[in-house]
Length: 257
Image 1 (cartoon, rainbow, N blue to C red):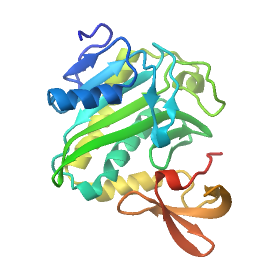
Image 2 (spheres, rainbow, N blue to C red; image 1 turned 90 degrees about the vertical axis):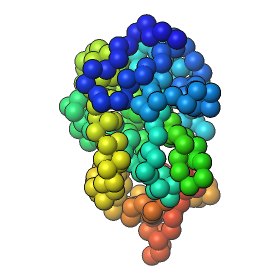
Image 3 (spheres, helix red, strand yellow; image 1 turned 90 degrees about the horizontal axis):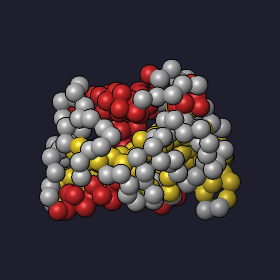
């Protein structure tokens, strides 16, 4: 599909150099995964649409995005040197890149809610969904889906916001796409270079609720606790009732306040 909205970014090394634009689709992640099955696109391929009708998020949640106002896109990556056991670093590099970008837009109190939602204050501005296919003990491809609220003004939930609402500005999507891809590429290169300690340190520094008392929902019951970090496989480490427990994405809930 010929691109009718976005230009190939000039300032990245490989992200977005192959750009697949569709005027509408159910989910850019689904389309990107189909491309991986059919043709094996080059690393850095960007699949983008102004109108995603059935965006997918963590926990099977949907993603609301007003057509033409926001970013709904997916990147196809091939992190061949990344060990499968370290796959949570795919969430880490992506969420850090989005944190870097949103912070650069003069937003304060930007935090990552585990595993990879981007919040400004108590409102969510960005969601990320990482899906991968493994062949043997290596990744054959990874699809990183990003939904970022840019110019949308009204939402169906009071916990969502956009860069425009936060700053009072309107943003040119082409310009912002290029800027965002540069942040994503910088963090991805850190991953490819094996800078895991740096990435984990930076992630914990911006992780919402770290070492802070919170109320968690575990099996439908409220439990008081405190986030202690994440383990090697990306599970959330929480101190509860004097003991450390670990949780997967669908095993615990908590609100950003």
